[in-house]
Amino acid sequence: MQNRPTSAELIGAVATFVEQDVMPNLDGAIRFQCRVALNALRIIERELELSPALEAEEITRLNDLLGKDGPLDELNRDLCQRIRDGDFSFDDVDLLGHLKQTTIGKASIDNPRYSGYLDALKQARGNE
Image (cartoon, rainbow, N blue to C red; front, side, top):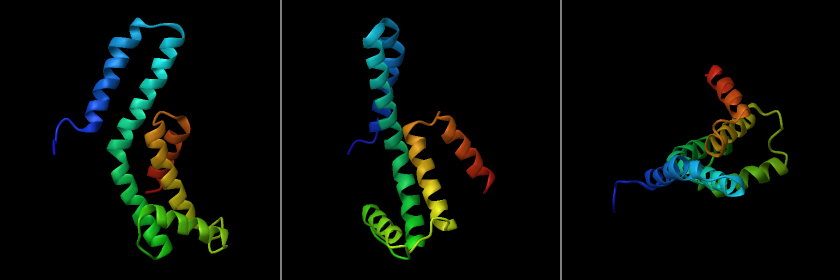
């Protein structure tokens, strides 16, 4: 197994090349399409870097919330079923905390410059 460069580093290098060397030489629709491709590369880069820790944190929260261990997809299915069954109320502080933290984590990958994400992150840090 090769350690360096990581997949995230390779994607970052390609994204930087596209952003700095390719896009300045484009215009119109092709420049827009290149911007879309660049955005996709940056999302993948962040996902590779951030997902392992975010998923581990989500599993820990779900373990605490549900009182059981398991893989993430199974825990999320169980949580959804318990919500449907009425085992959680929609004002449950622990449930809402978990959902907010999960959403903040997903936004950190999808669009870390989104103003709603930045506001939520600021609010979450203020509550620590």
